[in-house]
Image (cartoon, rainbow, N blue to C red; front, side, top):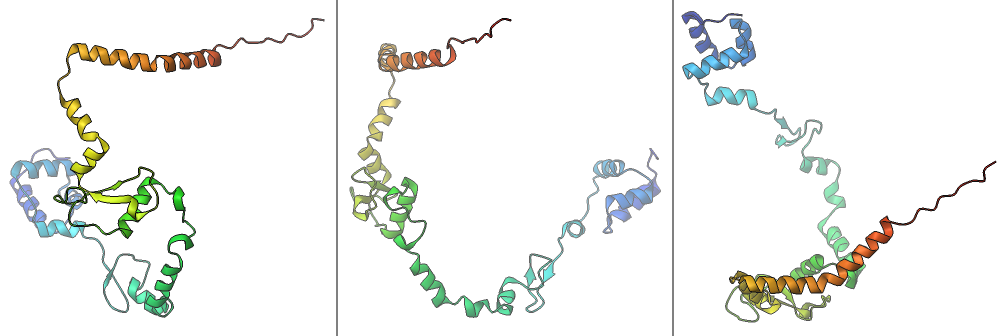
Length: 230
């Protein structure tokens, strides 16, 4: 392999970079490595045009037989709409038929219906679909509503048991706003000690019970069975 670059080689490199040829092919013509060509281009500040670069990275395009539009897959001869027409899907799956199927599986008719055993997230989604969102909060009637809050705190499948309220009213109702203000206040060292003592007294019995359980499970006496000696 060569080490030094002549003026003829540099001119030849500049002319080859203008053509849509890869770096591997240029390396074979000049009898050099791809790394040496890239380093030389970096030092001489030689760059290719954007149109030449696009030729290396363009994907193959596939077209439909019937309509001539572009399609994603190579295996399929037709696009989705043309294949549906060829198989008569429009005649089988009509709008009236689809509406009948949708109505036949609404609410309790659906096999995935859980009733009152539904989770919290899916219950909120069901109420969002059935209860329209008002322009203003139902409590303050000033701000825009963002949250669906439960009134009875039992999470029933009832539209009247929920209300659209703003975030400020929701925080006040749950008592989170007071906790947030109390946590942001500066606490003295004496109050920190008092809180630690209260926490220790509350969880002292729990810790003692857990230690007893742990000791019983892991430190049982082992019974050794020995056979009769002959």
